Amino acid sequence: MLRSAGVRFIVVGVLALLMFIPLGLVSDVIQERARYSETTMRDISREWGGAQLLSGPLIVVPVTEDVTYDRKREAVDPITGRTLRDEKNFIVYEHYEETVTERRPPIYLYPDRFDLNVSTRSQTRHRGIFAVPVYTADVGLDFNFDFKLAEEALSGDEVADWESAELRIHLKENRALRGEAVLSAGEARFQLEPIPHAEEGATGIVSRLGDPREIEEMSLALSMNGAQHFGAAAVGRLSRMTLESDWPDPSFFGSFLPDASTITEEGFSATWTVPHLARSLPQVSRETPEHAARKIATMQVRYLTPNDFYQKAWRAARYGILFIALTFLTILLLDRTNERPAHPVQYLMVGLAQSVFVLLMVAYAEQIGFTAAYALASGATIGLLGMFGATALKLGRRAWLLVAMLIAVYVVLFFILRSADYALLAGASLAFVALALTMWLTRNEDWGGATTPRLWRFRKPPEGPAQQVT
Image (cartoon, rainbow, N blue to C red; front, side):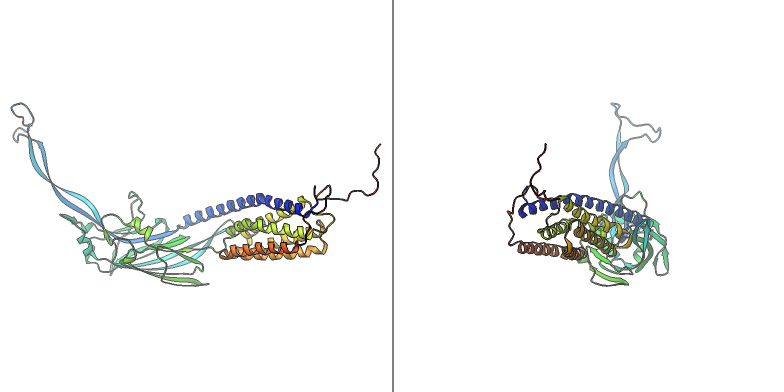
């Protein structure tokens, strides 16, 4: 084979591409661990109470209407009780009117003013090596209703059954409730019950109010467990929500973002104000608006876990081919003057060591956190490759150049993993600088080179006259 620089460069490039295989396997391992972590987090979150989304209060008023029907029935002799028949022995029918009270679609009424005050206290639950943030929320609601809107929603001879009116608060999970829930209006208190499971898709609490038209102001206080995120639907004609928490890493999302928020290391606070014109929900309706409210009118906050090292490790595996290629290129440039060039197997061992770095980082990060794990894994990898370059590759003092390049590469990788916003910029710039430096250092290279029986030699051919074999 040719011992030219051009052939060596091409072969080393092919070896770098082969590193996609171990990096792909490493990515699969990382994703499997990430799925296991997510499953554990979902299990703990579900057992604690799960993600909470509150919607309501909602007044539900049954509606009836008296309808008169013209019916017919068999005529009966009032004396004998026998069915009457005509001269042809056919049954005689008589017409009569019957008035029936029938149910009509109920009236659904959202509050005119809706104030929600939430305070959450967070804690961390552990299962094995995984930690899951959860919270306990104290929720206070103050609201009132414009019942004239409900009366205007009636049509024809419909009658609202105000004595059977209900107040409903819909929750994501009833089992998350803790302590006593208190619904009051002034000095009066109302009994609360869970919404029956027979009602499809309905979970939450309900109270029979009697006739609520004389009630001006109502309030509800309750406590609940939750995990991952908390939210509420902006159901009032004017909705205001204030949320305070000791969690330092919130992420706001939903249909409406907060008007103002303050985030510190001790926690955060946020306020929302949503007028009815900003949400596409009817104030009064004849069909349930709950599904729409929970979909298009939410104010939510996510309780983030900032050290998502599985995502960082997966990105490290994605960028791994770039850093392996840079290491191969560095060895190739430092190795140009060696009598015994590095063998392809040695390049493969260098690439495998850098692939194992990602696994080391994940394994240690699960125990000691991302930053310490990265420092430990990168330090071990740089030390191993530096020693390998000095001894196996016979780079001598040039091994320090290899170590310096590796330190620079892993420092850049660390900042890439810490900041996803600038990852592409840093990676592209590093690749360009590496290519430009290679082009400069090899500007006088004789890519054709001399010919020799082997591209990578482990020993010189014997010198002197050939020995005759008898």
